[in-house]
Amino acid sequence: MATRIVVTRRIPDPAIELLESAGDVWVSPHDRPLSTAELHDAVRGADAAVTLLHDRVDDAFLDAAGPGLRIAANVAVGYDNVDVGACARRGVIVSNTPGVLTEATADIAFALILMSTRRLGEGERLIRAETGWSWSMFFMLGTGIQGKTLGIVGLGQIGLATARRARAFGMEVVYAGRRQAPEEVEAELGARLVPLDELLATADVVSLHCPLSAETRHLIDADALARMKPSAFLVNTTRGPVVDEAALADALRAGAIAGAGLDVFEREPEVHPGLIELENVVLIPHLGSATIETRTAMGVLAAQNVVAVLGGGAPVTPVA
Ligand code: GLV
Image (cartoon, rainbow, N blue to C red; front, side):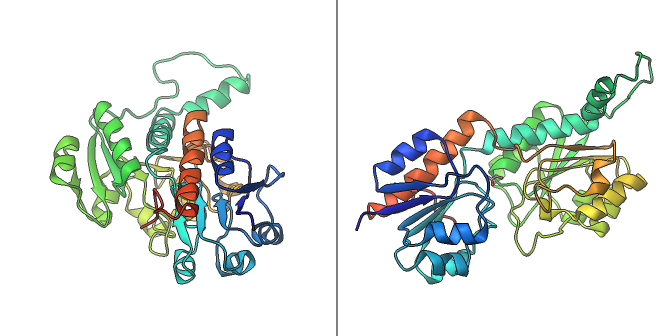
């Protein structure tokens, strides 16, 4: 029987072309996430599945796919949508797309740092509202970042790329995480590993880069927000559920922290209504890796993983 490769939502053409070299490719005709029933129907009998971050790859998905499935290639660096244990138990390889989206996502993290500290979303809304404005010494003053401290939660590739940008902008860097960075990385950034509570209490901007897992779900809850300085800003470009959005809305409304910039949300595409009504939060729709170049590279890397595994080789970027 021909090799069947299922792509659950359209990905860039170069990736599809590469997949076509390895088998018959079915691409979902819908430009939306498939419902669970549609997803399970689609993967039936697949040898490989190319999945997106909104697809749940769990036991039910694997049951639907059947025993022929060899790889679930997730087109994202995050793979919290994949039950890696369930895949391992059935010998299904899981791959993700690290590296290729590092710089694009760090750009967005830094854009959110600048947008929130300098009130850029608020300024844009003000002009578009056409209510009138005039320059004055005290008009829309923001917070400067030079000489301030950026606290990176999770110094992986994206955290590191964000920290490098911060150094170029004259910021100090501290980081929290499970592992100490190599000495040369700490030296380059002038950064040190601190406990999360210390980072929260001392950073002027806290930027989240840890993956979503059982340990990091609601890592930033009401207690964590209460530890932050009232002058501090929170930026999230990882996954929404790392932050308790209701607690964040309360903290922003009460002035417990100064502002926030969010690219990701707890229940995407929904955004907590308490956030929408606030001026001191920048809200953008999960754009971290959204450049033509990056999305193409992500698709191609996922396809390379599929081609390698179906060809009997090792995946290029298996998840740990
Ligand atoms: C996007 O959010 C990704 O994980 O790649």
